[in-house]
Amino acid sequence: MNNYLEEILLKLESKRPAHAKKLRLNTNYLNELYVSRANDFYSQYEKHLLRENTDLDFSIDCYLRMLDDMAIERMNFLRQGKYSSVSLMEVEKCIYNNPDMMCYHMHGLALAQFLWFDQYERYSFFADSLAGYAKSAESYLEIGCGHGLYCYTAIKLLPENVKFEVVDISDYSIGICKGIINDPKVNFITKNVLEYASNSTFGFITIGEVLEHLEDPLVLLKKLKDLLSDDGISYISAPVNAPMIDHIYLFNEVQEIRDLINQAGLEIIEEKVVISEHVSQQYADKFKVPVMFAAFIKQKQQ
Ligand SMILES: C[S@@+](CC[C@H](N)C(=O)[O-])C[C@H]1O[C@@H](n2cnc3c(N)ncnc32)[C@H](O)[C@@H]1O
Image (cartoon, rainbow, N blue to C red; front, side, top):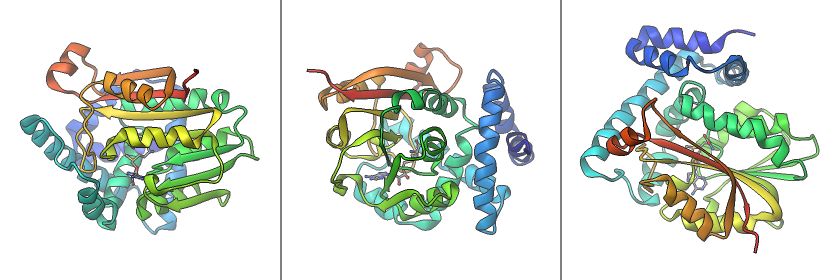
């Protein structure tokens, strides 16, 4: 298999050397499994790009455009102490229903999954434990699939007979996820999750990096509780202090996410918290460095 990770880093080196250097330094503690997982996903992703008559160079330009957006959002966030958009209506109009913006944003995020160590850490937390937590699940739901890495991985790790359903508010996300997964067994639904209904509950639900896209994440967590079977398990992740063009709900600290999970009638089985730069917690708090929170959760035991 090609070394896609190296190819992407070399291309980034020629376009934005300082950033590429930082990525290499940040990820140099990761092992061979990281490299093989990255290459597996990027090779699947490249097949999708080729079917769409494009290539990794296009994707790298999307990633750099997303970084530029993030720099502006971060500057505004540090000045104002809040995210630049606060309502679903704003981001639905400007982003989810805007194919040009969704296109570069989703391709940028797809690349970032293995370029940013905090993204890889939350992914490996999921991939290392999914098979164990979902061993009795007959159905799998993903809310807010985006690029589709998580669904792609779940299909590989779970038994053939598991039923898959994916819901996302954006047609573009559904399209890219469908294209990357390239597997007819998944039922795709374009819908705001708050308007989504199902006749049955699910044994496993993945909801990665979606809570911060909601005006009221507690409503989504309560919906998650209703959609989860009595013995079901969910993987959830959300960032703290992480301005992005489509983030509308600001978590100021990790404890706020834990408290909402608890308020929704759910409980944490296991969690992972990673600061997105190699700095101390004290430094991250002081300078509002983004922090990634991920957890496997279940129905609260009465
Ligand atoms: C940052 S991406 C997350 C991708 C992937 N789940 C991950 O963990 O990396 C957020 C996704 O959630 C979707 N989304 C945002 N608000 C939503 C809503 N109310 N209902 C369904 N999907 C939503 C967006 O379209 C986007 O595809």
